[in-house]
Length: 278
Ligand code: NAP
Image 1 (spheres, rainbow, N blue to C red):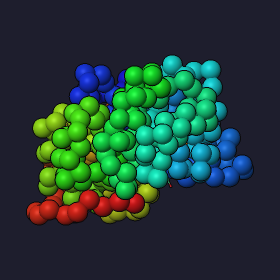
Image 2: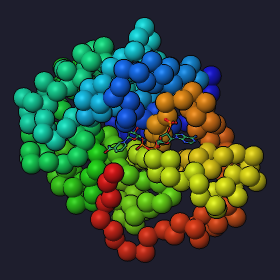
Image 3: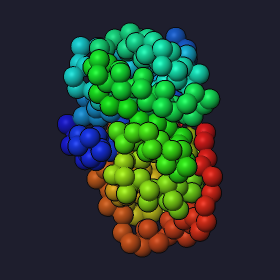
């Protein structure tokens, strides 16, 4: 079992800084078992955090999660997301109950608004708070919220646990303002697509640094993120070998020369950029 560091949420609880994504899972019967096996291999290694959404595979990814955690719910830290089209009070409560049914659990550790739609934030927050009081979710957060959205949310409630956004070496825009703001609020960022959906693994600079650490480019991309306080990474893989490889990034220590080389290859932002989404 690997001991995975945690980060503190505004409610005082702790969340692991490394988890498993599930986007693309549950889309075909042929790959269902392999995907569940990959998530199970993570649990066996001590990776408890699993990120899913009602959207992924139209509920199929949540069913893969159900198969992976069968008989071991208490080991897992489960995150799911409600679609903006289901973010009204009544709809969000029903959507959450349906997610719980698909996952085969009585509670989610964290429930996120997948992205902002037309429903007033206050109404979604009220649904989240009602779900929390009923014990169906332990806490809630948002996803794909830029600085202005978080600012508006904070006028409604300061109970938001996290903001899940696109962040990796090739997408550093949030370092300009969203990350500093999140730190002030003690609100960790869940970084999605941390290896840019696999596109970072062919990068030359990452390959050079990886060679010096007897590591892989994917591991260096993840280690770079894990060096930053308040960042949670959720790489997705349907292969146990990649799950293990990605997890091993938590023990890589990058040098200041590595950081300088990465800053040169992937410059940090110098001005505000709108939040990117995948
Ligand atoms: P990602 O984790 O950056 O990349 C996943 C891709 O990389 C898969 O094709 C995977 O293939 C491959 N891969 C994983 N580990 C690898 C390794 N060690 N070596 C080579 N290839 C590797 O992208 P993502 O799935 O977009 O993002 C991660 C998770 O974030 C998602 O699954 C989802 O849970 C969440 N997400 C959330 C949002 C949102 O709007 N909130 C948006 C996007 C993603 P294999 O399966 O073959 O390993």
